[in-house]
Length: 196
Image (cartoon, rainbow, N blue to C red; front, side, top):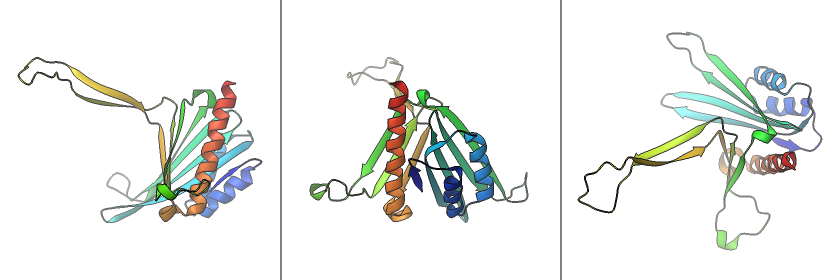
């Protein structure tokens, strides 16, 4: 669920409770990271994945304030040899808005030849970069001479990919897709306003 405009901590807490995923734990972590600053917009996304014989749940909470972007992840784990009881791990990261250098929104639409403006996409991928995580893809460099045996070093690219969140109409419902777009727009506008 996303909301933008005038919101309260209670609105965010209600959205976290609706996700049904350890709401007390998630709310406490997010509220601690946000602190007393008013909330401008938020998005709560709960994802269930199937891993071999296990079902795992993950919730991501994104919060926008007037000066910061807060991202929280909570994962549950089954017990293992080192920790025999099931447990959850929650992490939060707070990023100043002036650190966000990219907000990418990828939209997947069916039948683009008949697309009508305002129609919701089937899927949205929101990718946000602030320079904390860099992915480096390398491959051996070569030349056009098929008989060349020289070492040409490596070539590659570096990509900032701090957060990527995918929502789909089929998996999350049309309301969540719309809300992801609302949050992405609010975040994009906030990062531009912060530099202006």
